[in-house]
View 1 (cartoon, helix red, strand yellow):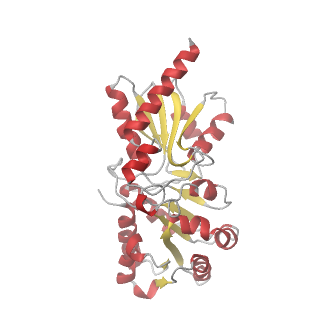
View 2 (cartoon, helix red, strand yellow):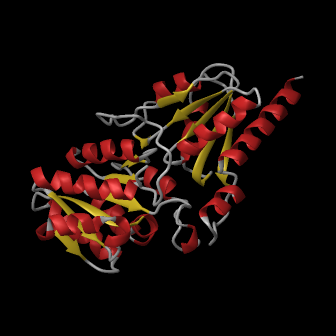
View 3 (cartoon, one colour):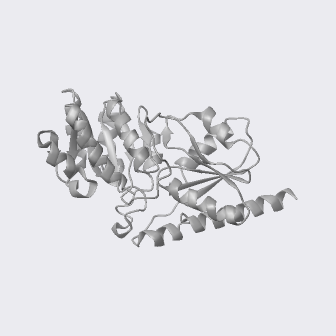
Length: 315
């Protein structure tokens, strides 16, 4: 297993060897985000701005006017929230090819606490016109997404987790934005997830299978754009729909799936699992995942309970 931040650093080093447009603008977190790998390999295209995230965005925008394809490197919370206005004005509104590498996103930096945990970023960035929003499941998909984003002529928000997870893909030669992946088949429930949470949902599906509940697992790596027809096909059938995200249930994946379903003829209810309009806190990662119902065991309990409730209502 390889952490997504590690594969990001390695991949940018590789891209920088053949593409002189690749640059990194860092916010004094290079050793954490692994931007230091790029700094060592390509020091002439590494710009250390310090703890000045708003200025980072301005510098990155300026670099695009000189032909560069810069990557912003910091913790996700600082890029999606502290630097929100410059991202909105300089990147989203202009469509500049700035790539936002939002490391340490979600809950998987538990000891940092709620000030550093970003559980609203997908909702914020999904609402941005021109912004492509990607949350890869593992390091394999992350590398493919990074290589695609480096060539894409527009802004990209890439959600990267701090810690490694069990990969859900064996290989991915090419990232196709909007594509929906069915990782596992099952008829009793449809579990929809994004980012590294998809790995934990796969484990939850195994727990449910041992209890006689077979779940289809649908991974949505690209929250914007989205292949809506592909998602609706993946959601079709008899199984109840549950979205599971390491994010607030407001405006993120759950909102996206609910919007897609209600604007179609599918006519199925959507149960959203995630942080229910509450701030996270400082604690070990496993404790937080368990507390907020995102560990495989807790997801399995929620799905099984939801299925029992649905069945009792139809009798």
